[in-house]
Length: 178
Image: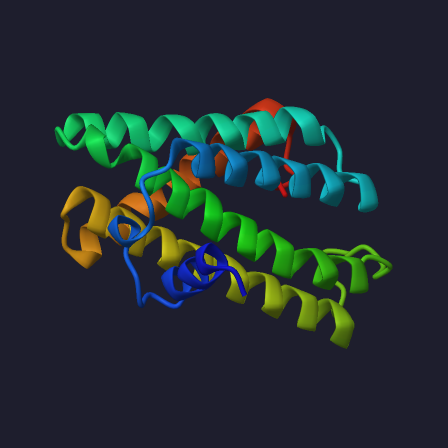
């Protein structure tokens, strides 16, 4: 396993912090491009309405929010490593979720008020677990990047998640982004 993948896995297991990653703008760009690529692959393999604008929204928030937050805390020198951590963790989780999404892709659509099938329930549980872990990882990253205690960092990440959901819903309708 390459050292950067190992470091990102340790970050996702909360054993490393963003400052432990190399300060490399090229690495950050590469992880971002790979993340966009996997999101586009996801959208191609699984019918997803308005995928490209949703990916652009997500990318804008990924690039903009750490820049803004670190600037407000006068810690903009941490931007590259924070971005590397966020993009790398997101890429690993996307790579993990893609096979799961393909496995469950043929599930019938959930009908409100109807009892979910066991496969639908399993998919929902896996999705909720992965989303929760992504929020924990991002909270860990922002906690270290901003020098904040855990709870405020988690509240920040939850707020950013709600912001993205709200913008997605406002711009594209009720379907969640990839």
